[in-house]
Image (cartoon, rainbow, N blue to C red; front, side, top):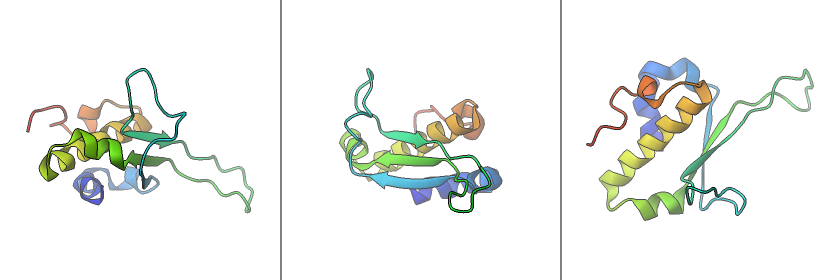
Length: 109
């Protein structure tokens, strides 16, 4: 995951500064959807409500380790899959298409 974020930082450093990244072994049982087992999810941040005991937080992208490992055949495929998932989730946070984040998104590598 760190490699994926490092690939995005040169162009998106300011936007990435508030985003947290985490890895969870498997999704929570209530995280699934009609598309099957998710590879990641976004935890929306909390707004600044001027409460020092409850400071504002940025969004968090949580990657699910086991589903990602299950979909990749080798380390290279895993690395590209993680990058694509990070691009997709980051694009969702910004409200743009993944191709805006990474012009090469969706191209076969």
